[in-house]
Image 1 (cartoon, rainbow, N blue to C red):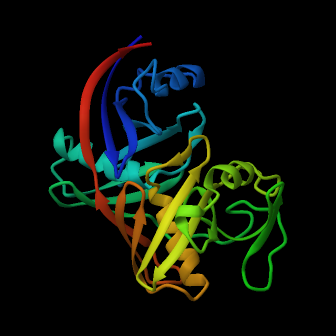
Image 2: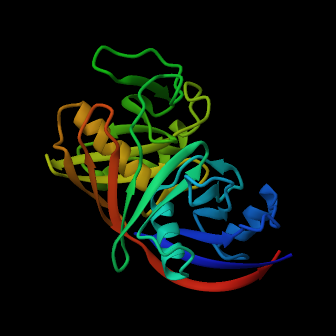
Length: 277
């Protein structure tokens, strides 16, 4: 099976995009794992499959897979990369287009050059929507116990599940050890992306994310959104926040309540190629 693809990245969160609008491509989890292998394949954090949709209200469909071959509901950096892919290949003449992914519809806007904004929809806090089965604490947090200790977390869905921990020093945060223990915690029936957030100022945070099905990545767009939402719920952050990730910076805006979260940041084209799986 020969597959044409493009590789892009958002702040180092690298994705591979395949155009599957003709619906001829079906990949197994094993094939995706081979594709994502950084030594024997192409290497990526997420695979994005651009799909056609039988609807006048939506421009494109989007299927997302993690590097381990499992499906993912959402990918913020991937949404920006798909925006650049559509714009660069002139698949649409619009500067704004709608993507349908796992039941959610995302608005992607080309701002200028490779700067792209995404309407990431409103955050959800209901336990069944995240989902999380732990008991809610009075301050809106949950407590997750693992071998490394007990951790208070804010849980939120950005179309995919997230838990956010506040840390004093992002450089010393136990991302690898604690992240690996919490990502598939028994209180998180579908797993979750685990964010470690240091509040620098009310308009600036540092963040590292251990992603479900991937491990720590250089950037996580939905993780940045979840961190800003969590920080606002804790009374620590303003509406507009710069999120400093290992791969670079994103701007996240949330007006609170039922308003959508907006994320703005760069997307970069790496290369195109063909792989034989």
